[in-house]
Image (cartoon, rainbow, N blue to C red):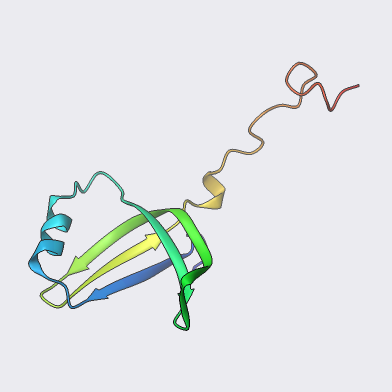
Amino acid sequence: DQEGSPPRTTIVFENVDQDQVAVLRSMSPFKVATVSLYVVMASSPDAVEVEFTGLNGGRVDYDAGQISMEISREPVASEPWPCDRTTKARFPGLHR
């Protein structure tokens, strides 16, 4: 984690072939890939321990042997807050 930027990680795929690199080359640099990351234990690969969905795929580097992709989430500071005013018309349950 770095201050002022959202947490990010890099995932590396090794032993890749030409078909996987062709998919990367066909992606538009202006459209961000949506990534879902599932954490599993080696002892029980069918049981998902933690899942992170809706992440943004970032910079991708590749060569003949591996593909590495940077993954991050939206910065918390970009979330609108407060998103709505709590007026009687919009939130009647709060105003009795």
